[in-house]
Image 1 (cartoon, each protein chain N blue to C red):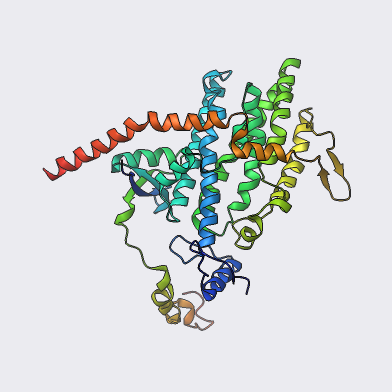
Image 2 (image 1 turned 90 degrees about the horizontal axis):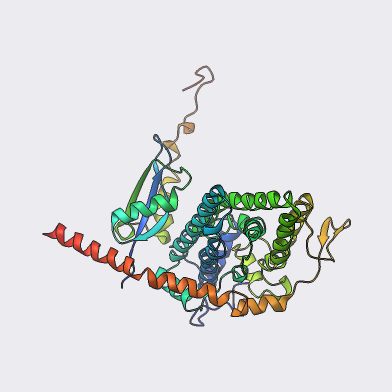
Length: 93
Length: 324
C-alpha cells in the first residue's frame, strides 16, 4: 500500500490573525487531513480555523537563490520612512 | 579547517567551502531549514536522533496505556488518556519534522517495527503499580523535559519548532505525575510504600535516559559543534538530579542511592555509579519489556491495516465520483 499523502497544516489562532504554518501530517484525503489536524494540532485550543494543503501543491522559492531573490531589497532604503529627515518643527509624520 | 576529513554517505569529502559556510551559519545561531544545503553527516545524525525521539514518544504510550483501564478514578483516567494522546501527538510532530530531511514515514515506521531503530531505553521497564504512573510522569517526563528544553534551540528549524510545542505540553505531564506521587506519599503507609517502590524502580532507569557518560558518548562532540545538542549527557543528568532530589525529599521519599549527597564545593549532588551494563543490556533488546513493547507496536500496525486500506479505497472512490 502506498504511503498516504502529506498535508501541510495552517492554523488561525483567533479571528483577526493570519493562518500560520504549524506542521504537517499524512492523510488519505483532505477531510481526514482536517480531522487529524484538529486532533494533532489543536488539543489545547490553539485555533479557531484550520487549512490543510497537499504538500506537493506548494511551489517554493529555492533557498540557494536566497541572495539573488531577496538582496535587491537591501539597497532600497528610500522605501522606508526613516530615509526622509524631517525638520524638528514637524514632529510626527 | 575543522570540516576537512568529514565524509558523506558515499565516503566522498564534502566541499570544504560549503562546510565552512554551514558551520559559520550555525555559529551565527542561524537555523538550518529543510531545503538548505547541509552536510550528509548532519542530515544523518538528525534523522537518527529525531527518529529515535519520535519512536520513543510512540512506544512511550505503552507503559502508561497499561493503566488506562485501571486508573483509580474517572478523573485520573481522563488525565491519563489526555497524556497518552499527547504522546501520540508528540510522536507525530517529530515524525513530520524528520520527514523534512528526506526520509519517508513508511521507512521510519518500518525501522521501528523491524527493530532496526532504537527508542529510549526507559520504555522497556514495566509499570506494575499505579504509583509507577506517578513515577513515570514525575521522573521520565521530568528527564525528558531536561533534554527537550535545550532542543528548542537546536540548529535544525523543524526540530526546534516541534520541541517548542512539545515542551509546552510536557510540563502538564510532569506535574500530574508528581501530584500522583504527592497523594500517595501523604496517604496510608501502604500507599506511601507503593510510591517509594515506584521511585526505587524508576530512579536509575530515569538517569540512564540521558544516555552514556560523556567519556563514552560517541555522538556528543560533533552534535555539540553543530548545535544539534546544547548540553552533554552528563550535564543534563546532573541538572536533573539537582532538580529532583529536593522534590523527593519534599514528599518524604528516599532516592535509592546510598552514595547520594550534597557537595558544598561543587554546589551539586554527588551520586553513585550508574549500572551501565544494565543500560547496554536494555539498549541491546534484553530489558524487561523490549519484546512485549515491539510486539504491541507490530500488532497495532497489523491490526490497523484494514483501516488504512479502507481509507485508501474511500479516497479512490471519491476520485472516481469526482471524475464522473
